[in-house]
Length: 133
Image (cartoon, rainbow, N blue to C red):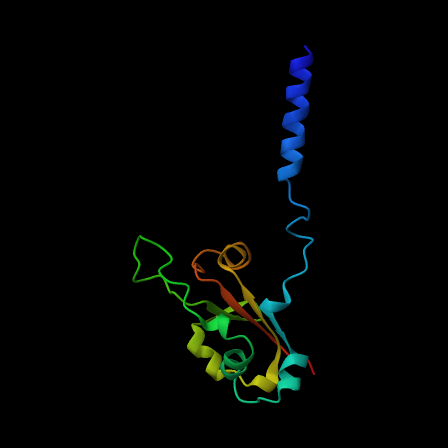
């Protein structure tokens, strides 16, 4: 009987030790995955959203490699671009967005992108929010 209680306590302690300290929805996003309008203004880069990302967070534009073993030709190795929550295209479409119009640029990793934007975002998403005037 005593051994059963000790085993139960040990199992509870082990499960609590493995539990995450924060919840997924309550976490603040990492600053490394966001470029704000203030960052863009402070950099005084101008140009396009692509230029800003290439200078401030070049890791946004790095290939994530082959993302699937099935139909690998159809899967992009680069993040998809969304503007105001709407699919916009591949990373080259960032060259069509004037940096002065950008309010925020956020990189969503693959698991976040699949959850927020749906299937087909195996390499993640670069989400652009337009600056409100």
